[in-house]
Length: 454
Ligand SMILES: *Cc1c(COP(=O)(O)O)cnc(C)c1O
Image 1 (cartoon, rainbow, N blue to C red):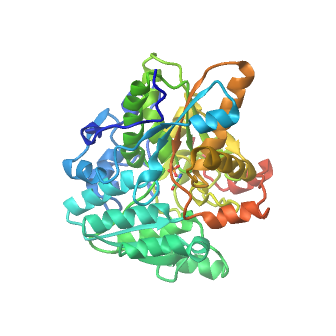
Image 2: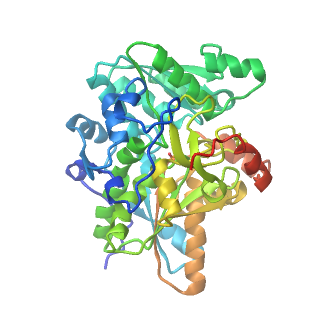
């Protein structure tokens, strides 16, 4: 048999529907609650914040397949289908009998998977007559993706960017500005939520939670303006299933099926995207695949968080979401995988964790960079610091397979490249980076004010 390096699909193979896992779940996630009344939310309750179609998708628990609009598939063609790659170089470097594959989502124009959801979210806004969109961004990946999507559909975009990243990551800011977005450092004086936190903590460097509060406030107080979120929510995970649906066909081309599927974990969108299409074959009893979410040891919501209703943002504007959470007041250490610094996990992933259908692991910062560099040397691609957590987990599993003498098939998602994160690599290479530990006392403190609803 010829030794293939990568598996390539045609444009006609771009999926025509996204996969919604909720109808197939043995236990459905608990409902979102209205933050004021604490009653289960209806789609209409979300209309002031999101586009109506995104709101309906968010609460859709009945349709397993949701059609991808032709306009969105057209736009996907800019970079999709993405390649599935056999990591032969990495296998060799590890001298492992495991077969390692990765789905390369770093080939999108903005360098990450985030564009898979930015495009449909912008499309639905446009279709519903919305003129302005707003969002938050941490490391700048989501902001960059939405900037391009907004441009493509002729929408004006304002991005609240976490202040520390605004100052430390000028290139991501420039990318957003290149596509024509307005970028505001958060906390800012332009919103009530921003002014309050600046008054209370004048030197606050910002967090995703605060930036979300600012963006949601702008959206709900401005006519014809909607908010778009890049992770955590069901409709975002739904859009990302194009990753796993393509990967499924490509694994078939390779004549294999994964024993282990891995994604790094911030709020859960790329992990869900690579996993859910394969998980459906576990739910129907066909395969006993393991699914591993790789989170940073400094922000361990899946392994150390509490399962409780919590807000998605700092100020408490969002609905209450049933999630594994470190508490919306948790401030993670300033690690370089900025996209993984979020306090909670989406409702579906949290329920799947409760039901032990998926598992999670914590990766220390130094191990993530060590793995990233090994991967870069072996495969040529410099991964995003976020994606390095998935790589580190794949390497751990490949080493275990070697010890056990088992020929496991491992698939991970390469969520993005790291070419705009070279300052982080620079700091790692000069020995400046350290590991951060979260103690039980830290978690007890950051979750102590959560209302106990569950
Ligand atoms: C945003 C981001 C993540 C984390 O977000 P998820 O929603 O958990 O996928 C991971 N990798 C990259 C490259 C990102 O930009």
